[in-house]
Amino acid sequence: MAEQIEASAKPSFVTRMSTMALSKVKVGTPLYSLAYGAAAGVILSGLVYAGRTLSVFCFDHEYYKIQSRKRYYEKQLLFTREQEEASQAHYLASLSTEYDAVATRMPFKPLDPKYRF
Image (cartoon, rainbow, N blue to C red; front, side, top):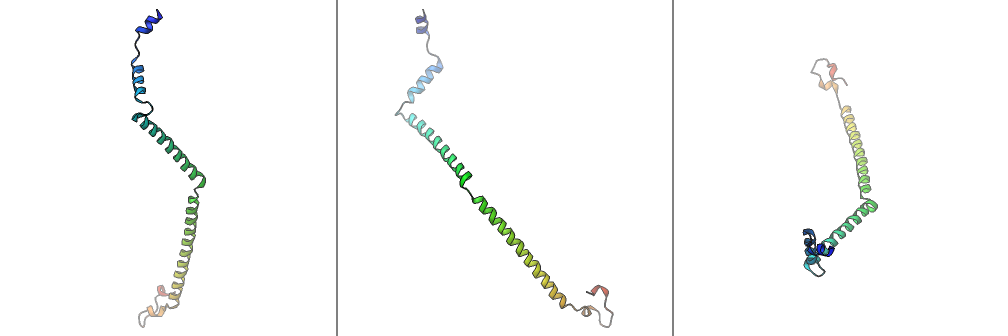
C-alpha cells in the first residue's frame, strides 16, 4: 500500500526545479565555472578588504605625520605674526620720532591740543 502511494506521488515543483538546476551546474560546465569564479572573487575581495583594514589599523601612521606638520605650521605662523607685529611696532615708533607737532599748526596760530603727542 505504501509502495503504491510513493509510486503514484510525483515530485513537487521545487524538487523538479532544484534537480534541473543542479543538473545544469555540474563540474566542467560554463555555469559552474562562472559560479566558482564569482565565489572565489568574493572571497578574495573580502581577504583584500580585511588586509587593508588591518594595515590601516596597525601600520598607518600618516595621520600622526600630518598632525605634526599642522602643529609645526601653526607654531611657524604664530611666530611670523609676532615678528610682523614687532616690525609694525618698530615702524610706528620710527614714525613717531619724526613727528613734529609744530609743523601741523597754522602759521602764527597756537598749536591745537589734538595734535599734541
